[in-house]
Length: 250
Image (cartoon, rainbow, N blue to C red; front, side, top):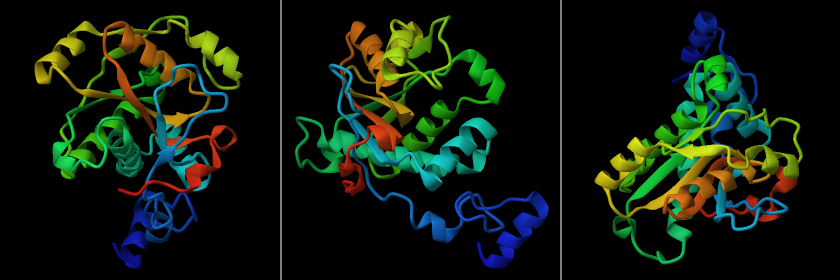
Protein backbone atom coordinates (compact mmCIF):
# COMPACT_ATOMS: atom_id res chain seq x y z
CA UNK A 1 0.00 0.00 0.00
CA UNK A 2 1.32 3.44 -0.89
CA UNK A 3 1.61 6.63 1.17
CA UNK A 4 -1.83 7.79 0.03
CA UNK A 5 -3.33 4.52 1.24
CA UNK A 6 -1.64 4.88 4.62
CA UNK A 7 -3.01 8.39 4.92
CA UNK A 8 -6.50 7.06 4.18
CA UNK A 9 -6.15 4.43 6.90
CA UNK A 10 -5.07 7.09 9.35
CA UNK A 11 -8.05 9.26 8.43
CA UNK A 12 -10.59 6.43 8.64
CA UNK A 13 -9.20 4.32 11.48
CA UNK A 14 -6.80 6.64 13.25
CA UNK A 15 -4.01 4.08 12.86
CA UNK A 16 -0.28 4.63 13.18
CA UNK A 17 2.89 2.54 13.04
CA UNK A 18 3.79 1.09 16.43
CA UNK A 19 7.45 1.64 15.69
CA UNK A 20 7.78 5.19 14.35
CA UNK A 21 4.30 6.62 14.71
CA UNK A 22 3.84 7.14 10.97
CA UNK A 23 0.12 7.38 10.11
CA UNK A 24 -1.38 4.28 8.52
CA UNK A 25 -0.61 0.64 9.18
CA UNK A 26 0.43 -0.80 12.59
CA UNK A 27 3.84 -1.58 11.04
CA UNK A 28 5.07 0.67 8.23
CA UNK A 29 7.34 -0.74 5.47
CA UNK A 30 10.43 0.89 6.95
CA UNK A 31 9.92 -0.55 10.42
CA UNK A 32 8.91 -3.94 9.02
CA UNK A 33 12.25 -4.10 7.23
CA UNK A 34 13.96 -3.86 10.61
CA UNK A 35 12.19 -6.86 12.14
CA UNK A 36 14.16 -10.10 12.77
CA UNK A 37 14.73 -12.34 9.76
CA UNK A 38 15.87 -15.42 11.68
CA UNK A 39 15.90 -16.94 15.14
CA UNK A 40 18.52 -17.88 17.71
CA UNK A 41 18.89 -19.88 20.94
CA UNK A 42 17.44 -17.94 23.88
CA UNK A 43 18.18 -19.75 27.13
CA UNK A 44 17.07 -17.86 30.25
CA UNK A 45 19.61 -17.11 32.98
CA UNK A 46 19.35 -19.13 35.12
CA UNK A 47 17.87 -21.84 32.92
CA UNK A 48 15.25 -24.09 34.54
CA UNK A 49 16.64 -27.60 34.91
CA UNK A 50 15.75 -29.83 31.98
CA UNK A 51 14.25 -27.09 29.81
CA UNK A 52 14.06 -28.07 26.14
CA UNK A 53 16.17 -25.86 23.83
CA UNK A 54 14.46 -22.45 23.67
CA UNK A 55 14.50 -20.34 20.51
CA UNK A 56 13.30 -16.79 19.87
CA UNK A 57 13.14 -14.53 16.85
CA UNK A 58 14.23 -11.38 18.65
CA UNK A 59 14.73 -9.41 21.80
CA UNK A 60 11.68 -8.31 23.77
CA UNK A 61 12.32 -4.62 23.15
CA UNK A 62 11.42 -1.73 20.86
CA UNK A 63 9.08 -2.63 18.00
CA UNK A 64 8.85 -6.35 18.83
CA UNK A 65 7.77 -5.53 22.37
CA UNK A 66 5.27 -2.96 21.09
CA UNK A 67 3.77 -5.54 18.74
CA UNK A 68 3.40 -8.17 21.47
CA UNK A 69 1.76 -5.73 23.88
CA UNK A 70 -0.52 -4.21 21.24
CA UNK A 71 -1.80 -7.65 20.26
CA UNK A 72 -2.04 -9.09 23.76
CA UNK A 73 -3.31 -6.17 25.81
CA UNK A 74 -4.97 -3.86 23.28
CA UNK A 75 -6.39 -6.38 20.79
CA UNK A 76 -4.65 -4.92 17.76
CA UNK A 77 -5.44 -7.96 15.65
CA UNK A 78 -3.82 -6.50 12.55
CA UNK A 79 -0.38 -7.48 13.88
CA UNK A 80 -1.27 -11.14 14.37
CA UNK A 81 0.27 -12.17 11.06
CA UNK A 82 3.48 -10.31 11.78
CA UNK A 83 3.84 -11.95 15.19
CA UNK A 84 2.97 -15.32 13.68
CA UNK A 85 5.74 -14.85 11.14
CA UNK A 86 8.27 -14.17 13.91
CA UNK A 87 7.12 -17.21 15.86
CA UNK A 88 7.38 -19.30 12.67
CA UNK A 89 11.06 -18.29 12.40
CA UNK A 90 11.70 -19.62 15.90
CA UNK A 91 9.81 -22.86 15.27
CA UNK A 92 11.57 -23.55 11.99
CA UNK A 93 14.99 -22.87 13.49
CA UNK A 94 14.19 -25.10 16.46
CA UNK A 95 13.03 -28.01 14.32
CA UNK A 96 15.88 -27.80 11.81
CA UNK A 97 18.55 -27.45 14.51
CA UNK A 98 17.13 -30.09 16.86
CA UNK A 99 19.11 -33.34 17.34
CA UNK A 100 18.57 -35.91 14.65
CA UNK A 101 17.64 -33.54 11.82
CA UNK A 102 21.10 -32.32 10.85
CA UNK A 103 21.08 -30.76 7.40
CA UNK A 104 18.10 -32.67 6.07
CA UNK A 105 16.00 -30.81 3.48
CA UNK A 106 12.72 -29.35 4.67
CA UNK A 107 10.66 -31.97 2.86
CA UNK A 108 12.31 -34.67 5.01
CA UNK A 109 11.47 -33.01 8.31
CA UNK A 110 8.99 -34.91 10.50
CA UNK A 111 5.52 -33.58 11.31
CA UNK A 112 5.44 -30.91 14.01
CA UNK A 113 2.81 -30.25 16.67
CA UNK A 114 2.78 -26.71 18.01
CA UNK A 115 1.46 -26.58 21.57
CA UNK A 116 0.59 -23.04 22.69
CA UNK A 117 1.08 -22.18 26.34
CA UNK A 118 -2.51 -21.84 27.62
CA UNK A 119 -3.82 -18.56 28.97
CA UNK A 120 -5.92 -18.29 32.10
CA UNK A 121 -9.66 -18.24 31.21
CA UNK A 122 -10.06 -14.98 33.15
CA UNK A 123 -7.31 -13.37 31.08
CA UNK A 124 -8.92 -14.55 27.84
CA UNK A 125 -12.26 -13.09 28.92
CA UNK A 126 -10.66 -9.81 29.91
CA UNK A 127 -8.69 -9.46 26.68
CA UNK A 128 -11.44 -10.75 24.45
CA UNK A 129 -9.13 -13.22 22.72
CA UNK A 130 -6.35 -15.76 23.31
CA UNK A 131 -3.23 -14.06 21.89
CA UNK A 132 -0.79 -16.97 22.21
CA UNK A 133 -3.18 -19.40 20.52
CA UNK A 134 -3.82 -16.93 17.71
CA UNK A 135 -0.19 -16.23 16.89
CA UNK A 136 0.56 -19.96 17.08
CA UNK A 137 -2.12 -20.59 14.49
CA UNK A 138 -0.71 -17.79 12.34
CA UNK A 139 2.76 -19.35 12.66
CA UNK A 140 1.39 -22.73 11.56
CA UNK A 141 -0.07 -21.14 8.44
CA UNK A 142 3.31 -19.60 7.57
CA UNK A 143 5.14 -22.87 8.14
CA UNK A 144 2.78 -24.84 5.93
CA UNK A 145 3.56 -22.41 3.12
CA UNK A 146 7.24 -23.40 3.26
CA UNK A 147 6.43 -27.11 3.15
CA UNK A 148 6.40 -28.15 6.81
CA UNK A 149 3.67 -30.50 8.01
CA UNK A 150 2.31 -28.67 11.05
CA UNK A 151 -0.69 -28.81 13.34
CA UNK A 152 -1.69 -26.72 16.35
CA UNK A 153 -2.63 -28.86 19.34
CA UNK A 154 -4.26 -27.27 22.38
CA UNK A 155 -3.07 -30.10 24.58
CA UNK A 156 -2.84 -28.06 27.78
CA UNK A 157 -5.18 -26.06 29.98
CA UNK A 158 -4.63 -24.13 33.19
CA UNK A 159 -5.70 -25.17 36.64
CA UNK A 160 -7.33 -22.78 39.07
CA UNK A 161 -5.34 -20.69 41.49
CA UNK A 162 -2.62 -19.36 39.18
CA UNK A 163 -1.59 -15.81 40.08
CA UNK A 164 -0.65 -13.15 37.54
CA UNK A 165 3.03 -13.61 36.67
CA UNK A 166 3.78 -9.89 36.31
CA UNK A 167 6.34 -8.69 38.83
CA UNK A 168 7.24 -12.15 40.14
CA UNK A 169 10.85 -13.28 40.50
CA UNK A 170 12.13 -16.35 38.68
CA UNK A 171 11.64 -18.52 41.78
CA UNK A 172 8.19 -17.07 42.46
CA UNK A 173 7.17 -17.76 38.87
CA UNK A 174 8.38 -21.33 39.17
CA UNK A 175 6.50 -21.84 42.45
CA UNK A 176 3.35 -20.22 41.05
CA UNK A 177 3.34 -22.52 38.02
CA UNK A 178 4.22 -25.80 39.73
CA UNK A 179 1.50 -28.23 38.67
CA UNK A 180 -0.44 -25.37 37.07
CA UNK A 181 -1.15 -27.04 33.73
CA UNK A 182 -3.23 -30.08 32.91
CA UNK A 183 -3.75 -32.12 29.77
CA UNK A 184 -6.79 -32.09 27.49
CA UNK A 185 -7.55 -35.75 26.63
CA UNK A 186 -9.64 -35.00 23.53
CA UNK A 187 -6.85 -32.94 21.99
CA UNK A 188 -4.38 -35.71 22.74
CA UNK A 189 -6.61 -38.19 20.92
CA UNK A 190 -6.87 -35.87 17.92
CA UNK A 191 -3.10 -35.54 17.77
CA UNK A 192 -2.64 -39.31 17.95
CA UNK A 193 -5.04 -39.74 15.04
CA UNK A 194 -3.26 -37.05 13.00
CA UNK A 195 0.22 -38.53 13.42
CA UNK A 196 1.34 -41.12 15.98
CA UNK A 197 4.86 -39.68 16.09
CA UNK A 198 5.55 -35.97 15.92
CA UNK A 199 8.03 -33.39 17.12
CA UNK A 200 6.38 -31.30 19.83
CA UNK A 201 7.26 -27.60 20.14
CA UNK A 202 5.92 -25.51 23.02
CA UNK A 203 5.00 -22.02 21.78
CA UNK A 204 4.78 -18.76 23.72
CA UNK A 205 4.97 -15.05 22.99
CA UNK A 206 7.87 -14.16 25.29
CA UNK A 207 10.52 -16.17 27.15
CA UNK A 208 11.29 -14.47 30.45
CA UNK A 209 12.44 -16.90 33.13
CA UNK A 210 11.47 -20.08 31.26
CA UNK A 211 9.19 -21.18 34.11
CA UNK A 212 6.03 -21.20 31.99
CA UNK A 213 7.65 -23.19 29.20
CA UNK A 214 9.16 -25.64 31.67
CA UNK A 215 5.80 -26.29 33.31
CA UNK A 216 4.22 -26.85 29.89
CA UNK A 217 7.04 -29.24 29.05
CA UNK A 218 6.55 -31.12 32.34
CA UNK A 219 2.81 -31.50 31.73
CA UNK A 220 3.45 -32.92 28.26
CA UNK A 221 6.20 -35.28 29.38
CA UNK A 222 3.89 -36.70 32.06
CA UNK A 223 1.61 -38.00 29.31
CA UNK A 224 4.51 -39.39 27.29
CA UNK A 225 5.13 -36.55 24.86
CA UNK A 226 8.78 -35.46 24.79
CA UNK A 227 9.26 -31.81 23.87
CA UNK A 228 11.72 -31.06 21.07
CA UNK A 229 12.03 -27.34 21.72
CA UNK A 230 10.44 -24.16 22.98
CA UNK A 231 9.73 -21.37 20.49
CA UNK A 232 8.80 -17.75 21.16
CA UNK A 233 8.42 -14.48 19.36
CA UNK A 234 10.92 -12.84 21.70
CA UNK A 235 13.05 -13.24 24.81
CA UNK A 236 13.78 -10.65 27.45
CA UNK A 237 17.19 -9.00 27.18
CA UNK A 238 18.10 -9.40 30.83
CA UNK A 239 17.70 -13.15 30.47
CA UNK A 240 18.90 -13.58 26.91
CA UNK A 241 22.48 -14.31 25.85
CA UNK A 242 24.15 -11.91 23.43
CA UNK A 243 24.02 -14.57 20.74
CA UNK A 244 20.35 -13.68 20.22
CA UNK A 245 21.71 -10.86 18.13
CA UNK A 246 23.18 -13.37 15.66
CA UNK A 247 20.14 -15.27 14.44
CA UNK A 248 20.02 -18.40 12.37
CA UNK A 249 18.37 -17.38 9.12
CA UNK A 250 16.58 -20.15 7.28
